[in-house]
Amino acid sequence: MLLKNLAILLLSFYKFAISPYILSQCCYAISCSDYSKIIIKEKGIILGLLLSFLRLLKCTLMPIKNNLHINNRFRLFIFPILLFVFISCTNFEHQGGWSNVVLDPDNESFFVSSNEGKVFNIVTNDGIPRINWSYPDEGKGTSYTDPILYKDSVISAKFDCRGKNCEGEVFEIRKSDGQIIWVKNIPSKINPRIEIYNDILIFSSLDKQNNVEDPKSSQIYLISLKNDSNKGEVIGKIPVLGEIWSGVYLYDGKIFVATMEGSLYIYDATKLEDFSNNSLDQISIDAIDFPHAINSQLFFHENRIMFSDVAGKFYSASIDDAKTFVEVDLGNWMIAKPVFHNSLIYTFTLNGDIITIQPENFEILETINTDKIVVGDPKVLEIDGDEYILLPTEKEGIEIINNSEFDKGNSSGRYSTEKKLYSSPLIFENNLIIHTQESELLFFKVKSRDLYYCLDLNEEKICD
Image (cartoon, rainbow, N blue to C red; front, side, top):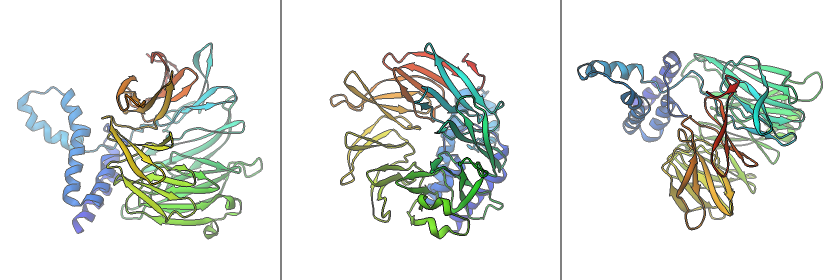
């Protein structure tokens, strides 16, 4: 136990004191230092360190091996240097490009947050996409937040980090021209998912740690959206013990957040208007502890909440009594959102398993391995009577998996791109739109799968 705690403490010190100053590219969404802490907690010091070392080899040294051409007699000298320099998988140059493309049904335009923290409004004239406006004028930082539509405006968030110091912004802009309505500074990272309940904006932010041994905590911010003197102002903050990674979720008048400490917190959204910092008990409904860190999105269906933890367990709990839950072992991590289709729950693990679950008895019916790393939310697509599952993969575009009875699980090709993806595709009319990590918008024809247009958001021009 002492060695395990010491290893976790050293990893925390490394992440906050050393890693921010070593810029390296990581092929994983969860950094190697965070992964190591989690796996050591779950598997113990010996197996945890072994799995961490294997992940480091795959993450950093293998790409170097493929691209580095060195004389053999220098390899023994260079290898220890490379091991030291590239031991960090954490990339503190923001990745971004996690935002999904959001359709505005009123005027059939699109909104997306770029990896530089800008919000773009995309319109199509004669079938040709173009940028109508962007906010702000210059990108600074990054955004993992999907823009959300609110009346005649758009609300989004971004943040910027220098070392372990992060500053966030949440803002409201007019849909018509991108002019700012209000902007609020937040002294930390802003987590991906934000919600609105009765003219109150709800989002979560990580608290700054002054010392590595301090317990990690978060805040749920409440911002007024009413057209009065308080518009854009913080009207309350809900303290949460633990790191919130997936943001806040709103369902049936309740707020749900899950933490990397394995806790699920539930609050009463109907009492937010009367909330003050001294009345937490008034809105708190429940807090349930699970055995492992909750790293997945939350999913709601027929008065039940579902989620996965880092041990690969998938849970289904009652909305009214979350202590009453069932579980099934998926065998791997899941970060993508499940799909409820044909009266079944489709889950998608990082190693490419598509696992169908019967919701009534919560039993696994079928497991199909696609050998793909699923990093975004899959979509179901029907074309000419055939049914497909679209899997956003990290480096190979959108894999098309047949879901028809006689060819289930086989690949039918892909919407191909070598750019990294962490977002879900948007299907609109006869088009499929992909947002890459480098903030390029790729426009495909759904049936032919032809890429017919590429828009570089950061350069605000057609892709080279």
